[in-house]
Image (cartoon, rainbow, N blue to C red; front, top):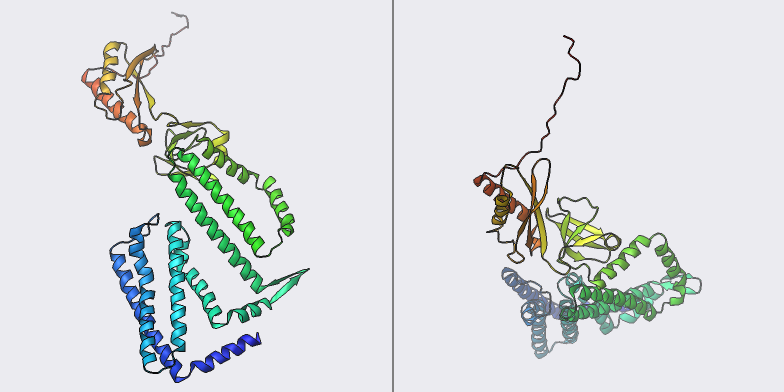
Length: 438
């Protein structure tokens, strides 16, 4: 700790000399000029609507890369120019040499972090941590260059507590966090690369690709954590009790969550349900009369189902495995709809059956093959029971809406042909059973 303070005091003693102040002023002006150029570029590209893409493209590197790297490169060029001018004026350019190297190191780190974050895509948390990660790495490099890294490590390593035979210090905690972060970042990058490769495999079903990608991501993250702990010097055998407690918790308190995760992988691998499918959940109350919805997303614990009312329901994976689910688009998106109708006994059923077929004409969503059919089902107490059956191929666009369109056409045609839809009614006759006393 004392050695670190001596180095800091010596640094500030040198700082307030005339030569050093001149160099610092020149570096400050160069950095301010670079910041000004960066602000202008950011405003320009924001007006043009440049956004982060889902993949690393040449267009993105040529646009956003300029905004990220150009200001620092411009500042570096200005520092090099000032370095030459001060050297020509017989100034001691030690600070300028250090500034040139440090700014050059910052450029290299910034470019590397930028490319790494862009390779992970626009949904990665790295997009919000680029500047912070760059600053942390650059500060470590600067401390090593200035000779401060070893004293800082010794100072942090001297602060800690002893737990049995193990000593936990501030430096060991920082080292553990840094190592874990590094391994997790590499695992996330590999997982992203695997996901991109799987998306290009058209021979695999979408649900299979999603399942493999999620399994690979979970496996790589878990493996990276174990490797990071081992690289940081943590004895993994000491975690036996902890892992045993976690396993016991999964067996009792978290068995439902574990079952949902396993069910999620089963759904992904057997391809019974995939994004875009239209499904109906048996025994579930919903806002839609038919209680069906569109599978929006398959998650590790649940499936996101969106119904016709715009309500998104999170259905646990285990429920989809253990309960009956109607998949309207499992193998063939075509489905048959049935419309029951009743006509009076005073009307001709043959005419009514033909009118039902005519009601399907002009309906864009009703398929011509298989052709619509009308059937006389039975004779009831209130009238003749008919039924219109027709096929559609786009249940994802709704079912009740096409029913409504066809029913409206039936009503209109029945009115034109004077076909009566009887109302169910019962006659009750009362007979006086008392004898006539007169």
